[in-house]
Amino acid sequence: GESVGLHLPTLSVQEGDNSIINCAYSNSASDYFIWYKQESGKGPQFIIDIRSNMDKRQGQRVTVLLNKTVKHLSLQIAATQPGDSAVYFCAETSSGNTPLVFGKGTRLSVIA
Amino acid sequence: DAGVIQSPRHEVTEMGQEVTLRCKPISGHNSLFWYRQTMMRGLELLIYFNNNVPIDDSGMPEDRFSAKMPNASFSTLKIQPSEPRDSAVYFCASSLRGRSLEQYFGPGTRLTVT
Image 1 (tube, chains in turn green, orange):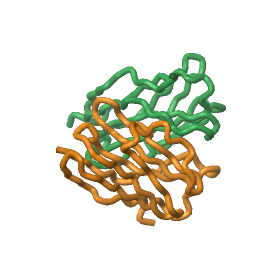
Image 2 (spheres, rainbow over the protein chains, first blue to last red; image 1 turned 60 degrees about the horizontal axis):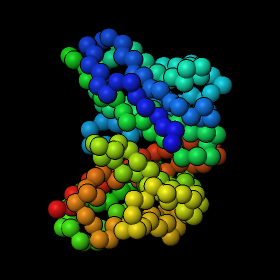
Image 3 (tube, rainbow over the protein chains, first blue to last red; image 1 turned 45 degrees about the horizontal axis):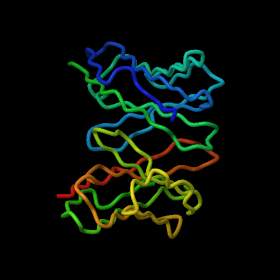
Image 4 (cartoon, rainbow over the protein chains, first blue to last red; image 1 turned 60 degrees about the vertical axis):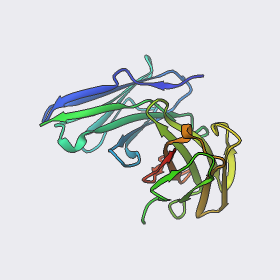
């Protein structure tokens, strides 16, 4: 079946640098995407979402980019901090009528 | 709001025993989801409810797994009998369908079956 996948399982960045976490999706019918952050011992926490009628959305220190042509989603974190260390998941759904499908996750490690 | 509440936070049981995991969704949310997370398989959707009605249970691994939602504020996931391969972290999440697709996750229950 179609699924959401991630290019990089782990990512290490220096504190203060920008981080980019990537996600590839294969379901062309998906029109809503979410990034979640999961810290050790906790449940996933919503970070930011984007609908397919947009190609960019910004939040506080985070930006999500959507490239529907190549079915690619990315999460950019500006000025990465130690508190950003976590596993990041992308998830997709189609018009809210199907459950979210989660990717395998990328572990972000911030080096102080 | 206290968020999604799950209990217990940790459960250690012996193979063959019955295990019941509990979830209280966020008040006002009308969709509830049960997930299982393991290192090997990641985050898997087991079952979800809309307005207390099970919509899709295709993710439930075996008949040993069952879930109920008797009312809008409570759901259970039961494993009977439990097996070591059921060891995982089980998450419950809720959302307000139609307003937002964002799911709010509980802290999870870490299940260890020995």
